[in-house]
Length: 195
Length: 195
DNA sequence: TCCCGCATGTAAGTTGTTACATGATTCC
DNA sequence: GGAATCATGTAACAACTTACATGCGGGA
Image (tube, rainbow over all chains, first blue to last red; front, side, top):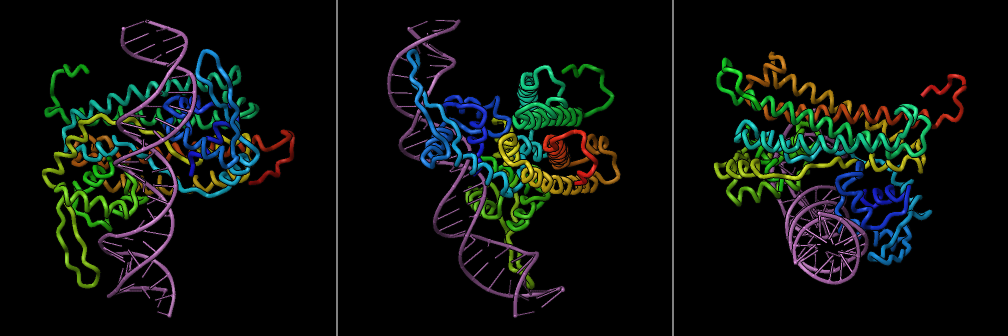
């Protein structure tokens, strides 16, 4: 039952439409949760039905109309309850881990290719998070912002996202290095490995 | 469709029963995937039905009989196909991130309590992974083992698990520090904050 | 005696993913 | 003219979680 709370948390700072939420919950701003549009539209409908959020229609001329949602008092109470409740720790779930676990028994060349793709992807997210953090803290140094800034929640979750992607990138790179070295049969070769 | 491949990967190095697999896929050895017993028994049945694994009954006197499974040639082929295929990157999904995202709007005291619990848990996993890695590499230094050891797959995934839990712990600790500092209203207070 | 570990499942319910559907506008 | 963006959904399926069920042996 965390998606509903993720939606509530996302709507705390600003009114958003389902479409805007969906963009945020896709790769990008969604440093703290991920969901597809379909899930979000369904969840928004449920949340509104239960009175945890309210929507208001915004008529637009040049584009389809949209509904902007905000959290109600009951919604805030629900978030409060959720925060107080104990929840179970989470695990990494990455297909690549499964593939690497089997690395000693399968073709490592394709595996290295998959890992390399992810290095690029991880780097892109790192850059994105870096930029996002800079925007959020403005002129302030990080420690100052965390101490005195308002709205440190999003900043903190973004920090977690950043360190996760950095750890991903570093592990992908190290794994590639290890697998490549092991693939080379003789150690006394001329330096033409290049890539 | 990654659970089936996780099971295949787990059965590569040793024959295991459903029960043993379940223990491995619970918190502990399962550095690369997580699943509950129910899921595993169901998946084992499917995999056997499809001929990707084979089971053999082991009769025991003092305990209930068990079935040990191992990967077949078709199973290995399936893993090979899976490894070659592109898969989508993964995201963190941690309830605590949602709670921290909402930190500016809810009671931070309970939140700090939840974070503190997780610090303990993360540290326990760190210790466990550390011990596991030492066992796997034996006398060898890490780099030597990664270069020359057999079966580096499990070692590499365990390394990822370790760094994930370290990053968790560090972030939990930093977040607790930030939230506590912000909770103190005046900066020129006598030093009785204690906890 | 009661609880824990071994050993294997079924059934029901909740989430999450994939595929499909619609229709206007703006950008290339 | 075609693709991308805005905007909202429905339907079907796959994955995951929670609850329940059974039964023996060993240790406190």
